[in-house]
Amino acid sequence: MENALLVGLSRQMALARELDVIANNMANVGTNGFKTRSARFNEFISPKASADSFKPADKRLSYVIDKGTPIDLSQGAIERTGNPLDVALRGDNYLAVQTPNGERYTRAGSLDINGQGQLVTQSGQLVLGEGGPITFGAAESNARIAADGTVSTDQGVRGKLRQVRFANPRALISDGANLFSSPTAPVAAGPEARLEVGAKEGSNVKAVMEMTRLMEVQRSYQSVANMMSKTDELRSKAISRLADQQA
Image (cartoon, rainbow, N blue to C red; front, side, top):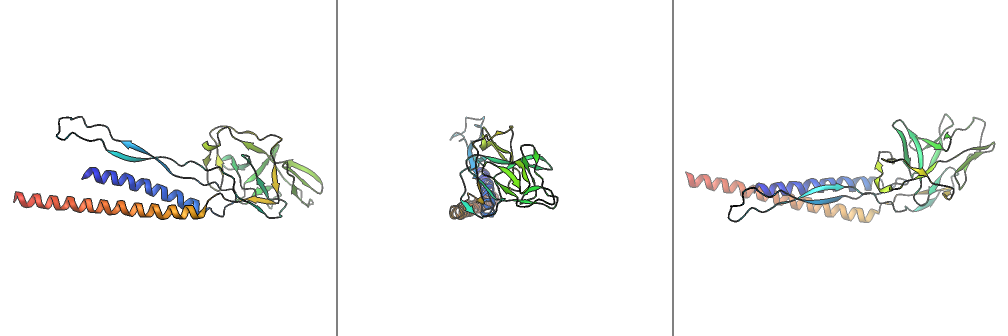
């Protein structure tokens, strides 16, 4: 009975982890450039018992362990905004931004200019150009971004967005605020990298599929909880009957 409870507990922990992943996806349905994640699990078979003389022989137990949360890098829907500082990235390019924790990367291309005249993301991170952060003078106007990433105003070019790509983008680590960090250094996206100006890439979360999966996981969790409750009840009855027999 203890084994049944332990197996059930491992399954509940896995389902709880999957619920967290689904909830995060659902919370970011409207987040620009967000990439959905999914939960993956492995079967863990416990080591064989050392005593093989039992009749029947001990059986190896199958548990559930967390394998990771792989990222779905498929393109989100492109939405036209008409804002000259909105850019939608196509393909596997990322914008480089500066944060207090160092350089990070994002697909969220809704940009703005802060009070210090710096080009920033909606979350306030400095957008990096090929020569560093991009800034504007107080007298400049008509800021715009070209398809190749060149940033200019009525007074001329102010820089070019630093676009990067990764040899293994699936190794990117979510770092909050729709940002990614990478265990390896990125490479320049190259002159072929293009942006769709006046548009933004939406989240690639499929809300209906996530909601369906959410209901499935909740039902599975409840089913395991019921099984564990009945197993615990059976154990209590067995202990009670053994006590009566001994009395």
